[in-house]
Image 1: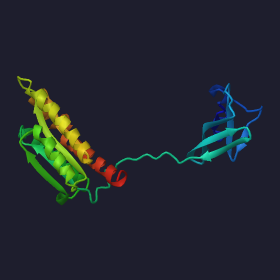
Image 2: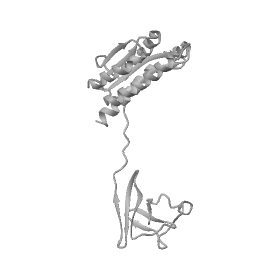
Image 3: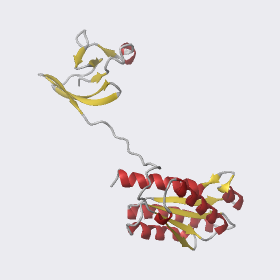
Image 4: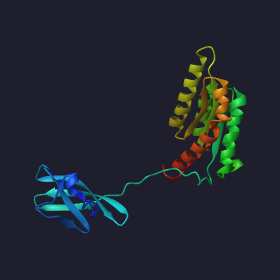
Length: 234
């Protein structure tokens, strides 16, 4: 198979290092791009190869079609990178599901989330806060809110602190799987903002203490995901 790489002269000083050799003793040109033949490339009556050309600052991929009668370069579409924006918040609506259990922690997480929404220009009227008894109940409520079609993202806030029994493991695992299932089943991003800590000190440190406020971080994630879905993945 004959392979080609279109380099636009930017690799002229590195041809030998990269294993390129001139085809038929000379470089061949296609527009403003050099076409270099890969050394020891096997031959076949008809083959495809990948090429890149660079004009100005734009890199354009090509496919070279090789046959007995010659070759042709077909330009393919450029690669697109899609990402959510944290500054395009107009019209985005959010729900926040908050567990009441360990309220001394979850209230601070909620305050951090609401402060972040405000800092990024999300209006108060575009935010609904729903309280549930504990982290175990977050998933089912998040799924219901997601399926309602009213919200662009659901932020899930809770705090599970390890105790003397295995109850911690059951609740923490159920909360995580519940939020994931809510996202998958509703098609709306459900953000996991549930702390799972070994002790109360760890939780306090992550609710506005020396480790920051994880509620604020989760709110920023919710904004980015809501923007990604609304502007790119509809």
